[in-house]
Image 1 (tube, rainbow, N blue to C red):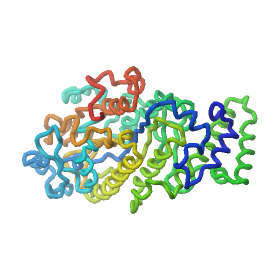
Image 2: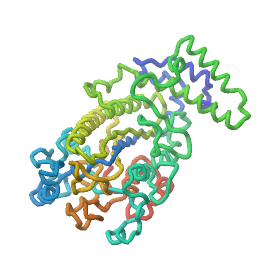
Image 3: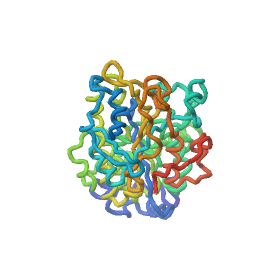
Image 4: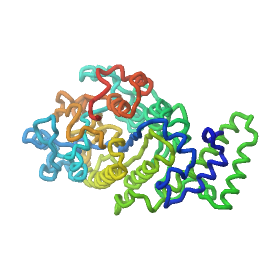
Length: 461
C-alpha cells in the first residue's frame, strides 16, 4: 500500500518520527514532501462538524417565544405545575432578524445567545425526517411516513443516513466524504473523523473513516511514538503485513492495519499535545463534549501537517431522552454543550478558520409539547437545530416555527408532535453545498433531495 506518490512507506514513517507534541503544528516541513505534495490540491480549507444530541432533545424548551401571545401559548400547555415549564424571566432573550417578535433560548444557553447576537449562530426551526413535503391530512392517512417514526434507533439512523423508507448501510456524511475526497488529492488521512466511535453518519462507500479517542493514546502501544525500539518494532510489523498479499482478505486486512499504524503515528502527537494553541480556550471544561470538540480543534489546527483541505467531524452528547426530570437533566446537558460550542468557535477564530468551519446539531427527533407524567416529555418529530460558524448568516431563524397548539395546524397527534416544515435533506444539502459539493452530486449524497422545492435554505454565505 503506497502512502503517497514519490514518498515511500519508510520515508513517510521517518518523517513522522520528527513529529512531537510541542511541534506538531509549528512546521509544515515536518511531513516533508507528503504534506507539500497535497497542499495545492485545493485552494481553501473547509470543515463540517456534526454535533449529534442522542435521545431526542426537547426543542420546545430550547427556543421559546417571548412575546405575550407566544409565551402565553407555551405556558398554557407547559404550565408551572407540569415540571417542565421555563419562566420567561429565566430565558436568554434573542431577536431574530426576520421575525418581529422576540424569542428566548434555554437558560443554560447563555454562551449561544452571545453567538446569536454576534450573528455567528442561526436556528433552523421545525426540521425533521421527511420523504417529501407532507400535509397533516396525508400523515393521518398513513402517506409519506418515515418508517418507525418515533423509535430512537430508527430515527437516529434516518437523520444520519438521510434515508427514511428503508435501512441504509451508509450515512450522508460518509457519502459526502466519498464525493469530496478528491479535494484532498492523494492524502491518506480520512476525510471523516469521529470522536464518538464509528457511526452510520460517517460511513461511506469509499475509504474507511477514522475514530479517535479524547484521552489516552491513539494507536497500538509501542507503535504510536517514535524511538529506536518502536521504530524497529513498527518496521518488523510492516514486513509481516506484506506477507501473503495474494490473498484478497489478507491483503485488505494488511492495508487496514498498515494505515492504522501510519495514522496513529500522525494523530497521537496531535491529540496528546499539551502545547496546542487552542488548549487554553477549553480551560476548566471537563465534559465529554468539550473534550471531543477540543480534539477536533486540535486536528483542525494540524490541518496543514496532515495535508487535507476538506474534513467532516462527528461528535456527540447523549442523555436527552427526558421522559422524567427534564428540567434538571436538560440544564446539566446544555450547561456542558453551550460553553463547549463557544470554546470551539473561539478556537476557529484563533486559528483563522472561523469562516471555514461550520458546526451543526442533529438529534433523534423533537419531543412532545404536552408534558409527560414524570415531569418530562415523550418522543415526537420536528425539532429545532443550531448552526454555528463564521460563514453562518446568524442572528436569525430559518424554516418556520410551529404553532404551539395541541391538535393545531402543526400537530399530527393530540400531544404536540410537530409535522416538520423543513426536511433533513434540505438542511444537509445547504451544508453540503457550502462544503463544495457540486449540485450534480446532491442526489448521490441525498437520494430524496429532488422531492423538495429548494436544496439551499440560505443560512450559509
